[in-house]
Image 1 (cartoon, rainbow, N blue to C red):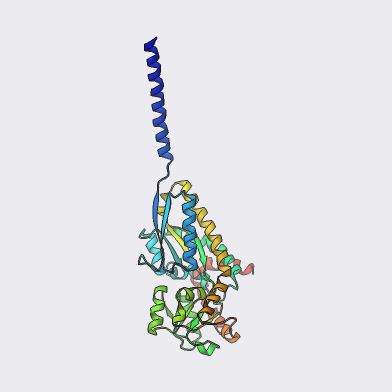
Image 2 (image 1 turned 180 degrees about the vertical axis):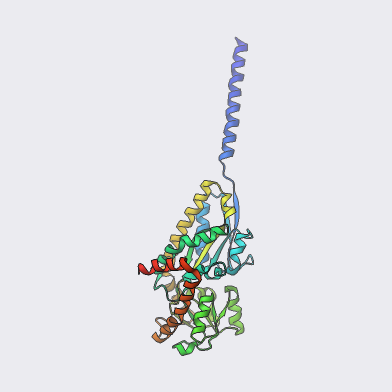
Amino acid sequence: MTTLKFQNHRFIAGKSLIAALGLAIVSGQSHAQSFSLDFSNEYNASSIHAQGDAYFIDKVEELTNGDISITLHTGGALGFNSGDHFYAVADGAVDIADTLSGTMSGVDSLFLLSSLPFLVNDIEDARQLYDIAKPYYEAVFEDSDQVLLYASPWPPSGIWSKDAIDSADDLKNLKIRTFDRSGTETFRNVGASPVSLSWGDVVPQLATGGISAVLTSAEAGANGSFWEHQNHFSAVQYAIPLNMVHMNKAVFDSFSEEQQQAVLEAARLTDQHNWAAVETRTAENYQTLAENNVEVSDPVAQDLTDALSDASESVIDNWLESTGDTGKTIMDEFRSQQ
């Protein structure tokens, strides 16, 4: 009787040990792998884009219970600017990047769409245009082993200058920084002397007199403390360009299915956040400019707007020619909804 009782105890203990081992194995299998990623952004930490990226990072950490941590490197700290990002992410040199769309035009002219001059009138138009074109953007990224996560709109582009720009004549021979080839072509058409520069080169060129004006938003100028070199901002409503946040696909594919869904959900929430944030940003920027004695012209003289608008017609025609059926399809759908 004693022997049988001992054997029963041993049997029960053995079952408990097996159950415990099984639980440990299942627990180990269900615990998600952790990842630490690097995220490159060439703009300042206070910029609307870096703030949007920080929001995304927080959402990813929250939705993955901390299993995916992302470090945001602003101000080009990793040594990459927007012009480097597409291939840096494709090659795995950086995991995620926030990139000014037009700087990727060498990959595909489609990326010039959001910065085509005088195509959209407001944020609502810009959002509509992005929604139409998004599947085509996604396909380009996918072809280069990347995932498009979300877009960040800039407030409308205007002209920062040392002297007031009151008419089209003030654009003649103006040494102005542009951010893509569409801007370069537009300002060349009105008789200016445009220079295409990445963001990191703008302030040094202003400081040395290499340029005397900048095509960018009130937002960007405020983040770059342009009032140290420029006294005027002319709100010509040139365009509402996009930045795009894209990720190396091999890194994305290494996540569990649950982690992938969490990252995509964080991207969806960030997309909503960014488009809402830009709605009030111009007013906030104008307040900052006023505090730093920058004179804002909004609206600008009609002949200035007309001259730039006329100069943009060939730019849009050239874009349509370079993008073929894709560009035509996007433009036809956008214009049919206006």
